[in-house]
Length: 123
Image (cartoon, rainbow, N blue to C red; front, top):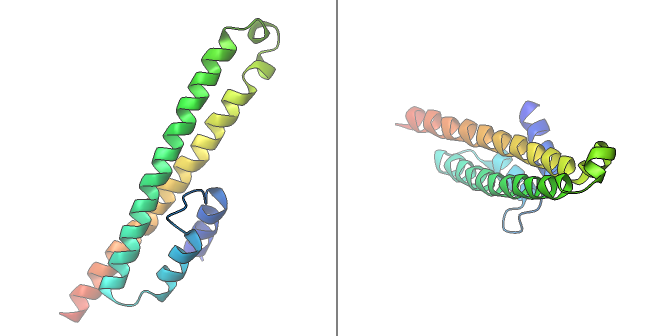
């Protein structure tokens, strides 16, 4: 159940990478029964986590840029909540994407461990 919730969150949180389809990853994870299949799924989730981390860094940089831009206006002194709204939004998105990346890493670790267990059981 926990893996299903994580996969749903990952799918809903950021399906922005064109080369990695979260639904296909989830389907591959369900169908994995051999050590090689689990290793392949783990590798795919690791790659997805990397791409999510890069996307989160982009949002962090954009948030910093928007915060610097907002700090140089008079509005930041008069109405700071309005002035920094865009920067805060980018920071929230970055945080959500970081969470999704760490969940993808956790799923990758699970499948790596599962592949090792299955490989030990086969030998």
